[in-house]
Length: 120
Image (tube, rainbow, N blue to C red; front, side, top):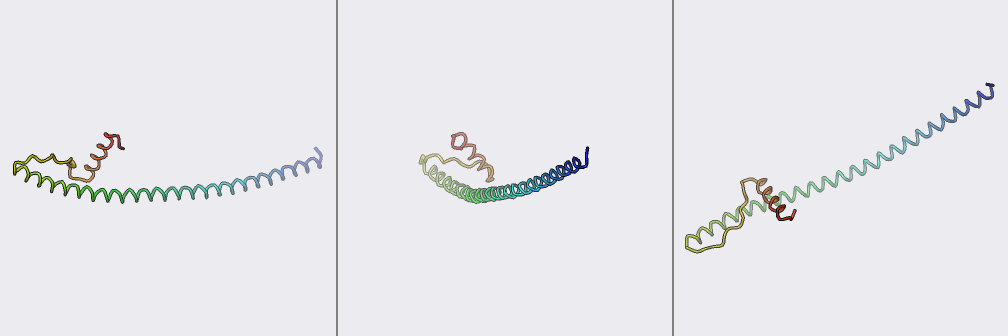
């Protein structure tokens, strides 16, 4: 192989090395941009999930208040019904009473009731 052929081969290899470096740089830049875009998507979706969780928390707090109020009103209604029974009246039956003492028990019961009715 002559000196000219070796020089030409070296030029080709050098050009390939330059091209590979350019390809690698382009790949790294595109990878960086994709990571930035995915990070933005991740952050947006994470924020949305956080917002949903906060909304659920607000609704659960409201639900807890309603459960407490239901129990209070139920106890009052039970007292009124007992007085009606003492007076020999036949009052309507009481509405459903929440089972258990905890909010969790009341919510689980209600969720199961709604599922059985096909509403959840």
